[in-house]
Amino acid sequence: MGWALDVGCGTGRAFLPLTEAGYRVIGIDPIMNSIRLCQQRVSQVSIKAYPLLASATHIPLSDQTIGFVFAVNSLFYLSPVELTAAFLEIHRVLQPQGCALLHFLALDDWRHKLAKEIPPEQAPLPGYRFVITCFCSEEKIREWIYRAGLTLIKIELKSIASEAGIQRNWLALCKK
Image (cartoon, rainbow, N blue to C red):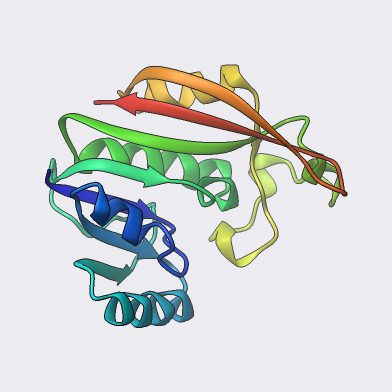
């Protein structure tokens, strides 16, 4: 099936499902402790996955080498400037006809009320070091995908009730 890229892989929770789907997996995360935890998971479960210390804005892979990009629970930690760069990187590493599953937080997600909103031009870089979350409308997601040269196949809004409020998550399936 080829290679899958887990953007913002964290502790590598998606590695096993991606390998079970037939992919060889590369995970990137900008936090060294996450990479260490990924390496432990890979050795404990004995799967073919390769965690790398890297940012979504500078993916250390050759052009057109990835068949599937999985970016869930990671993009909303990026500032708007970083998000634009990440989309261009995702497009660059995707093979022709490659697909990407992208996850965003909706504007009306309850977590939007947790902190004062920062104007995009004042967002610190790199964003993952701060409590910055990017909340988006469907229109903004469509615009980012279009500007990156990707084609939107499907976009869905998923809601999950919790004690704190309603989590509202956009999932966008795209292809190159």
